[in-house]
Image (cartoon, rainbow, N blue to C red):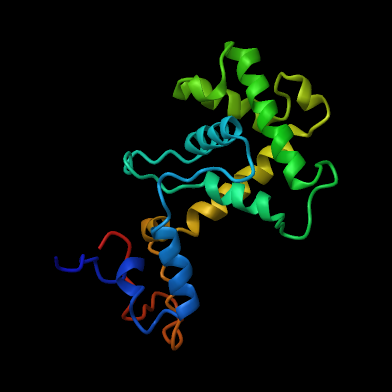
Length: 201
């Protein structure tokens, strides 16, 4: 079987080249090869399924119905390992507790608004729940002790980072900044190195 061909200037075309360091290549390839059947290690299965539904609502991937970029596994792994970015809003508890409460709050809001669990809601209902949480005044007892808007902001930021750290998402926006060896030489306005492509090409 011949090796797959990827368009010039895409992340997958650049990965095997000398433009990408070994460490970067390994990290990006691991994201491409992530198994589709991830089993949660920290979150309970039903809570993990809820996080997957929330991620699918915030980052719909209609072009990848069979194999969307996985977002929830990275959150679960980070919480398992106790990793954090070194700061948090004083209105929020530590990340593990924030996710436990926040996801529970989303479930409460779904029940309050639609009398159903969040993963069973249709797309419009899910959006309504997320808008209520983002707005900072969703129904639900948990939100009386947890700042809904801050939790939503932090969760959205983390899911965004995970999404755009994936090679397929980087290809969507024409990002090839990881291919930085030996160096970028054309850094003036409208200049492009040979390994870059113009969006839409």
